[in-house]
Image 1 (tube, helix red, strand yellow):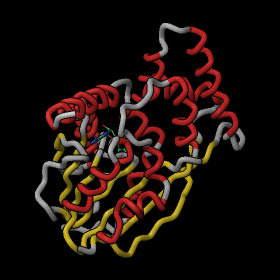
Image 2: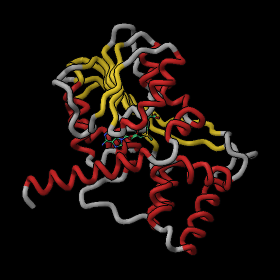
Image 3: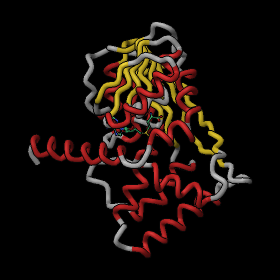
Image 4: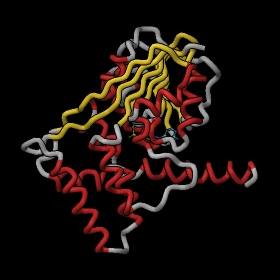
Amino acid sequence: MTDSTTLGADRALKTKHRAMWALGDYPAVATEIIPELGTALVAECGVRPGDRVLDVAAGSGNAAIPAALAGATVTASDLTPELFEAGRRDAAAAGADLDWQEGDAENLPYDDESFDVVLSCVGVMFAPHHRAAADELVRVTRVGGRIGLLSWTPAGFIGQMFATMKPYAPPPPPGAQPPPLWGDEEHVRALLGDRVTDVSARTVSLRVDGFATGEEFRDFFKAAYGPTIAVYRAIADDPDRVAALDRDLADLARRHDLGGGAMDWEYLLLTARRAT
Ligand SMILES: C[S@@+](CC[C@H](N)C(=O)[O-])C[C@H]1O[C@@H](n2cnc3c(N)ncnc32)[C@H](O)[C@@H]1O
């Protein structure tokens, strides 16, 4: 394959990903289901007034907005600028001032060492080439600066949701890696390597109690969450498979039900300092 063929294939893949994340209503997922995650990541990174912060795969600003409220100078970068409209609205309502810029996590449009803190909240994990994305995170962080990553674990609820959807989804393109691998501490340590020091990692659970039943969870994700909508679209002409996925997603949520619909969604919270 020539370089221009590879480049063309990558552009096509990113165009597809952008369209997928623009489906449904991702900002509703961020603000109604997982708003605590952005604040938790900003706190873990110790964002201070005056820090230059880059939020990679920022979406509608789940982490970028609290970082700006902490007094940092924040750039919210994402492949899907369609999400910025909701982000700008939420930022204005919160009194936060930040920049929104379109960008691919695997090819960030910033100079080396541009930021004091580079963070990503369940975001960079969705870039398909993990090594390329990790290289970019390190490159744009200044030496001595901090990298903070919050990622769903493979064994946790969202990791299991992706495993549940996999048999129904078209096969991933060659070279694309599964997002929940970023929730595996060893995988992330290997990606960052000796370019970072002071790595701290722990798994934490988010209590989600917004869904009374498994069906309620499934129907919300089926309507709002791009990756789930995309899988349903891929099998839309096969009612038996749609019914089977309907059943599997509701069953998954039921298996995680701690009572009254409450669930714990596990994630890895990892911070590191750029060494060289
Ligand atoms: C689950 S959302 C997380 C958004 C936000 N960080 C949050 O906490 O709500 C995943 C985000 O990754 C973005 N994304 C996916 N692939 C990307 C890529 N290659 N480069 C940059 N952003 C990407 C999507 O557009 C989407 O906004």
